[in-house]
Length: 194
Image (cartoon, rainbow, N blue to C red):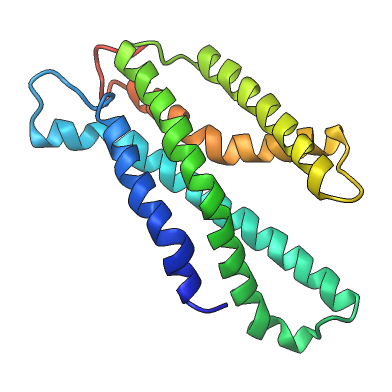
């Protein structure tokens, strides 16, 4: 896979999503009489949650590509000697493809929702759990409907339910959980700590 795919797919999405994420988080980052250190500390949950989410995506993608490549070796499409040649490119391509879908969901869904809860002082573990369950059901239903139109035979609803759990855990929970964890430790947002 050539490097031109990075420019075509990732850069435009990153140039839109990452500034949007910082802008959305600015509502949560408001502190009384902020110094530069306090303002920087207010962005730590965003960075921690985002780093955990991206690390989870990288590990999951590696595991999936490794298993897929192993099955293709078993089926005779590749030899074991070709693994170091082809597997890195397959992983890189899958990471890029995942980012195309994941970045907008995190930056325009999870981050604004978390920033709103932080800025209103309503970030609680129960609220996170309820919203995670709603997100899980919505993603499951959308994935199942998508499979009805494009995949033969379509995925059963149970498959969509189980695969969406991983997405919610890896992409939906790290940012709000990092914000909750750091606010409970009075590290930031002393007024909204629960």
